[in-house]
Image 1 (tube, helix red, strand yellow):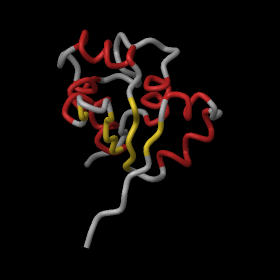
Image 2: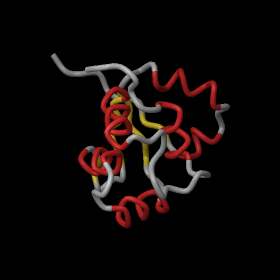
Image 3: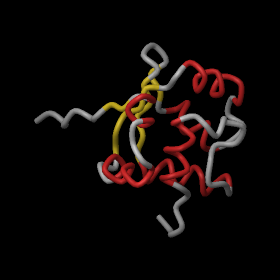
Image 4: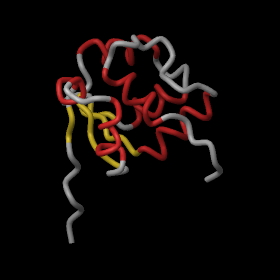
Length: 109
């Protein structure tokens, strides 16, 4: 039995959506996001200084730039950092918009 293929989104896909429409993406719980050149630059620059960056680094295919996002795990990384967005990532990036929409997990595991 094979696992279902995850849906992949690009910056252009997310830019075409109103923030309220992100729910249709996050309700999938797991999906892929294609990092832009600028977002990859942020990841390279920030390194593993924050849990959110470490989470992305641990879940990226550097050959393709695709990061697999699990909304629960991403929220836990934000909670570990005590933030609601990725530090030092430009606010106008779609990755930042997506991370902010998912937000930190408020409850326990």
